[in-house]
Length: 234
Image (cartoon, rainbow, N blue to C red; front, side):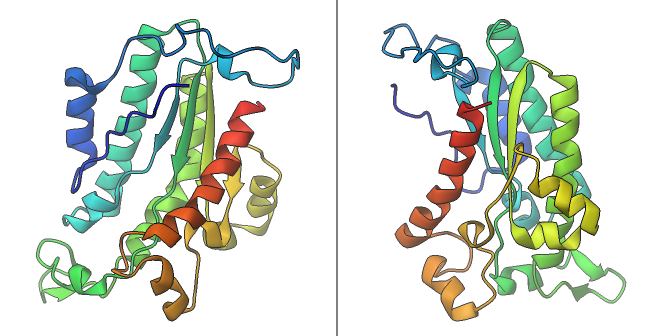
């Protein structure tokens, strides 16, 4: 298996990510030419052999951190995913697109939120700042299940897994939450997506309250593995 291609750049936002993948960063060469993947005969398993690649996306927090409001952030996330899926469809029309989309991770660097006003103000006339990013992140994450459904509808030759926190599910209608918990296209990870109420425990995984440390990445990797397992079995 070839090593992953990592396109994350510090401070990158959805609009420059779109520019980058449209201007050379989207790889088009086959990753399976070495023929190292083999079918084990299980027709119900989504074979890696049948995939060109798996896209894992986490984006949007830099939009919010740069002063952008949730609505345009959501639009940027939507446009980014559609750009990837469209490029995949053009270059690999006979191969399913496989994508794991991670909801926004929580961030508690509240001092940055306070400094965002202006332009990102709770009350623009009074220059009253938001005290944290929490409500903005929750608004973005609540929009993701419907977005993922629209991606699946518009790109039917795709396998899309949404990694979600239990905190998000708890804000949904009870029936919707039950439906999400029974839907293998949505993986709820709870603590593995840093849904941690205790501040001291949260800081053990995100010391700067924005970026995971090594212990945090190990915790998060458990959720990513669940997403990979799900997408390989679809």
